[in-house]
Length: 460
Image (cartoon, rainbow, N blue to C red):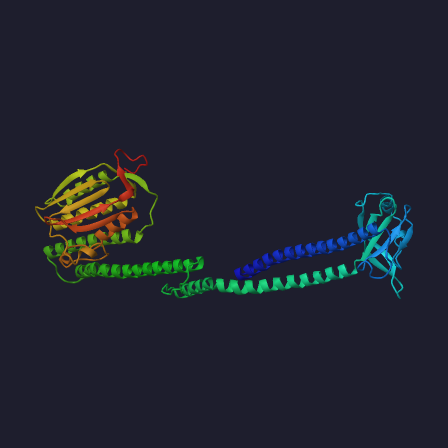
């Protein structure tokens, strides 16, 4: 069953319950009101007979009520023409007849035969009030009235309430279907958009937005999701295209050198050595590039986090940098013991990328200062710094400034640093130092806290 059908049934069901309860309440209230009016009329007639001490037997003398008087034994003394109630011989009548308490009467519904003027014996339902005549005239007065009009009025009311209830339920079902259809129109648009996107694989479509209700918020959230998906797919396409472009150059160079070595050309030992050195260097660059691509492709799909000492990671990276760039002076400027909840292997890669980038730009005799305090790692070199037009782009994938194109690398080092920082809930910023050189800040915010000692979870 569709949601629209369920909403329609719920609306009709709720209205049905309300209408049925209201109809039953109306019916019983009206029946009670009619019976109260009838009982009041009977009681008023009985009081009149009690006060006057005799009855009038003419038609219409008591407003349509019929009266009969019986003695202490319940025998008829006098009464309206054609009426004979004493035959019912109810012992309660004799009890009331012997009472001198005027308010000791009772009501009852009876069936009796009434012979009206010019009519045969007709069985009718009657409402009867039995009251004592009172001292000194012992006996009882019986006042009755036909229930035919009351029953007819209640039957008409019952029929009206049934039709009104059925009409209200049908109207509620119709309006429920119309309203639910209008209310679920945004959901249908979302469904149609999702189906089209599933067919085409292109999340560029958007659903119309408007209003401030929950469905409008759902539509806005759906569009936000589509925008994020579209951006993700676009990044993936650019990543694949850029990776293919970057891989093509070293692969072409490798293939060329291999073809030369396999050819018929006579190569002297020096030429062969240079070709083999080129193959080794290009294979190393290829390995580094593939590792960087895998690092970026991994994104935020991480294993379980663990605690590790960030200061130990920095110290290890410094030892590696001293071996890789022996001509550069590496100066630790305070490494505060820092515990990080995160991914040690990825953080090692990010820290090394920062140091490697600083080492490449420092040159022979240059110096690099490294500090760690308050959860922030700073790497400051004394190279040329960042050009104004390059600084907003240095963390983009495959971006290489004009000055960097003569150096080895694919422009992925700082992009990996940003990915790692964001994976730890942190940020990374690049700026130029006041007295020259570049300064890169890696801030881990809430992921880092002061502390020392080994990792209880085996991370260090």
